[in-house]
Structure formats: C-alpha cells, structure tokens
Length: 207
Image 1 (cartoon, rainbow, N blue to C red):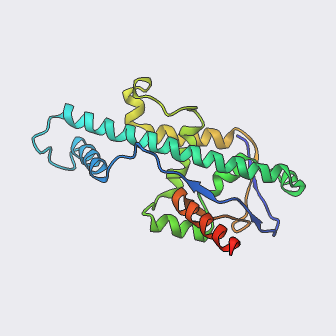
Image 2: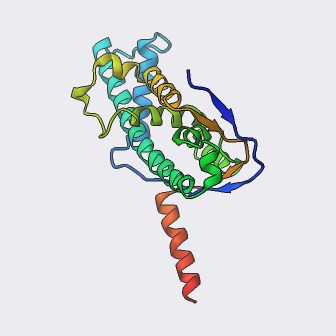
C-alpha cells in the first residue's frame, strides 16, 4: 500500500472555490423518500403496505440508480476542482516538492475548512465525507454517467460499498501528502450562488 505523509509546513494556501452545479435528473424529495421506504420495507423494518417484494425492489433499484447518477455529477464537479488545484501545484515549486497530488485534494474534502463544513451542514449534507468519497470513487471509473443497462442489479443494490472501495483504490493508486488541517483554505458555492456573487463584484467594479 502506498503511504501518505502529512504536510508539516505552516503556510496557508488559498485554493479555488469548489462550485457545485445542479443536474436536471435530480429526483424529487418525495421520490427519494419512497425509495428509502422501499429499502426499509425490504429489510423488514417497515410494514410492506400491501406492496409485493418485486414492486419494492423496483423502487429500491430506481432510487439507488438516481443516487449513482447524482454522485457521478457531483464527482465531475469535484474532479474539475481538483484539476484547478493541481494547476496551482504545477506553478508552485514548494507544493510540487511537498508531493501534493490529486489524492491530497480529494482527501481534503473529508476534512474541509470550517466554512465549508458549516455550509454543507446547513445544506443538510451531514455525512459529507462519505458523499464526496463515493462521488470520487464513481467518477474515477465512469467517463460518462452510466446507463442502467450497463450496471448489474448487484452493483446498483450495493453501490455504496463498491464506491467506497473505488475511492480507496483511487487514494492508494499514487503516493501523496496529506494536507495539515488548516493548511488549505477554499470556499464552497452552488453555481447559481457563485454567478450572483460574480455579478455583484462586476457591478461594484463598474461603479
């Protein structure tokens, strides 16, 4: 296994903002709730409400597949951000010598700066380390959002575990340094929020 060494430098580096774009295939909250209920019914934690197991299984698979596609698009934004971070590394000798790699910045999302963590929690993303890790894992394999016909039922049912393993494989694929907590700062925006921020800044500059 490739080892990761923490960076001990006291320098604080400013990274580009991580911008998350909406995706048109987002499932409604009602649909996600129905899919979650189906999973609990199949596990015996809720009564089946007169639905047979085949109907429940279809709902479960539909919900899991929606989650896979949402994670794919999230991972696409994350890898775009990682690429921007690596552009900074390529222009800075200190960061290059510190052995900062793509995995360094992917791991940073599991322990982000306080401002990013607070925003994620305000958005209701409580288990953000797992969400980002699975998004990276899925995006490290698929170049395009996967069609359901390409995926086995076992993959769809158990994608959480598979995505976790894919993330671990990505992180172990290249030796890298683990950033010291607080050594990198960045902001998090939804794309619409960031566009409004830029518009406000342009208007202020024009006055």
